[in-house]
Amino acid sequence: MNQKPIWLTAIRWSARIFSLLFIAFFLFIFIGESLSESENAIEISTFDYVILGTWAIAMLATLAAFKWEAIGGTINVVIMLTHFLMIAFRGKIALPILSFALPGLLYLISWYFHKKLNFK
Image (cartoon, rainbow, N blue to C red; front, side):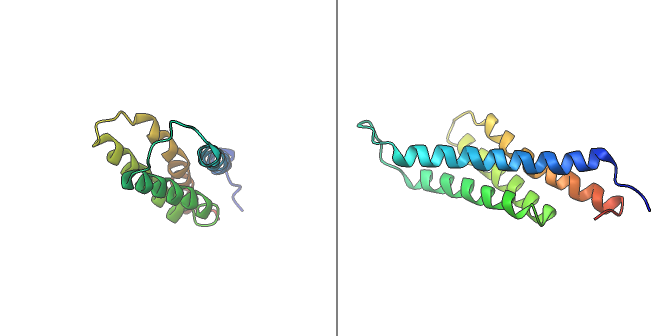
């Protein structure tokens, strides 16, 4: 029986750790903004709700990827690219947003090599 390479296990666990960090960051920002009672609060636009929705979907996708790597990884990458394009078309620099697609990319790499090398 072939033993799974350590690099493959490292990729899968890196994806999981980055997913948990991504979720923690999202929750930290969301809870912090929700509890904020600033006098300078601005009105939330429809675009802002859409952006928040893309973050929530990407977060749920990373959770789904714990069980279904291909599905969760694909959804995460597509949503984060969509998020990036939505912000970029508004004329803002959104390159750091693409870093949140890293868990999805790692899940896709893990899924691909597990399938290619016949590991579960």
